[in-house]
Length: 72
Image (tube, rainbow, N blue to C red; front, top):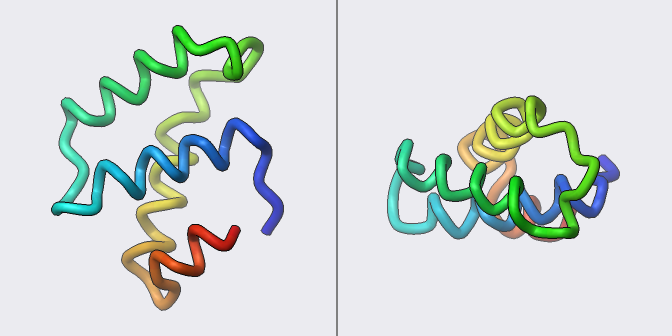
């Protein structure tokens, strides 16, 4: 699976946020704020955030492990 640069950054933020336990709403809101403010996300469709974050969480919780997600 090939990720865009922005999706890969979101995956990294989700992995970091969920490292200690399940990702909280506060952490997701912070990621949303970063996407709104960081220049690397200029032009990124912010409505995709829930989908991309959920895909990452599904990969972490599924048969794949964190190392595989990070390899992506």
